[in-house]
Amino acid sequence: MSKKVQIVEVGPRDGFQSVKEFIPTETKKKVIDLLVASGCRKIQATSFVNPKAIPQMADAAEVAEYVLKTYPNVSFYALTPNARGVENACDAGFREVSYVISVSPGHNMANVRRTIDESFEGLAAIRQSLPDMKIVLDAATTFGCPFDGKVSIGQVVAYLEKARAIGITIVDLCDTIGIANPRQVRAVLETVCEKFPEIDFGVHIHDTRNMGMANSLAAIECGVTRVSTTVGGMGGCPFAPGASGNTSTEDLVFMLQEMGYDTGIDFAKLLETARFLKENVPANYSGHQMNIAPSQCVMG
Ligand code: COA
Ligand code: ZN
Image (cartoon, rainbow, N blue to C red; front, side, top):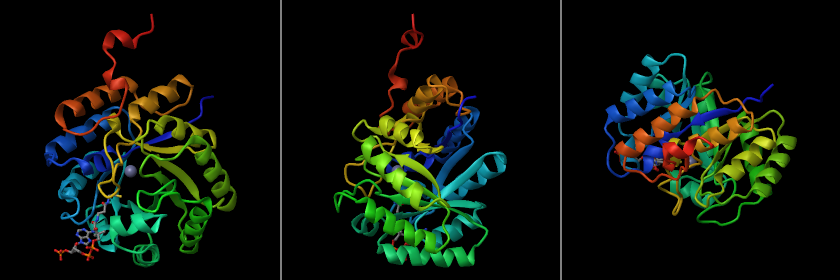
């Protein structure tokens, strides 16, 4: 029997957030329509952040209203950086959010203008005030930081102790700047899975140095079954200098399906989605499959 891997499509947030020109809300909705038609069942639809910091996400409530009403059977969630963001996401109808706190102090300060402890205090308060909100903790810069440099496994463990102390049970380990290597991914996962058996770990890997596929596969081979990617390999954190897009969804789906994994996604439809995006949204794209001419797609 093939093993299931849940692909979490984060393009409508991580991909779009770094696009300078405002993407019309209708285009955002159309991309989500295509993703759902391709079989994506978990999608990070937007983020509830200060629109002065990320103007691209200013239409978060409108996107939320459309996707939550149109696709009740798809699991949508939104990124939030603080209590205000979680409250706004809740008001917009989301019952799941990701809350971003970096493992490295330098990136946390650049990204959300808080110390790590201040961010955890904020998260603890939210857990009290909104106990029914499902929260995925996005552990940004788990594998390295553009400001502080190397991040040790000890730092990751200390961070996760803080998460455990406030009852967090879902964590995505994020390679925000695409600096991880497969050996490091294995070492981190082996340690954290052993020390934190009550936490469900996913990975969120950027492809800055063309290591996204290798790192995602390393995580999957360590037993991770939740992997975040962006269609077309779009994106990057505007507060992490040099960060580029995530591992491309269609590249990963193709590889996993060839290896016998079940992602539930229709590769051909996903590829059409990536091509629609490239034609309609002026972003950086690191995906490879979208550049293959149709005649080269079938092995002779
Ligand atoms: N949504 C909308 N507006 C928000 C907000 C939120 N979640 N949180 C704060 N604000 C507004 C405040 O109302 C205030 O507005 P004003 O300037 O009109 O008075 C302003 O933002 C500053 O508020 P403050 O609490 O002092 O926040 P800050 O200046 O310390 O900014 C963040 C912190 C996190 C809100 C902001 O830096 C941010 O949204 N960053 C985006 C992070 C991100 O998305 N990174 C990429 C993904 S990892
Ligand atoms: Zn990211």
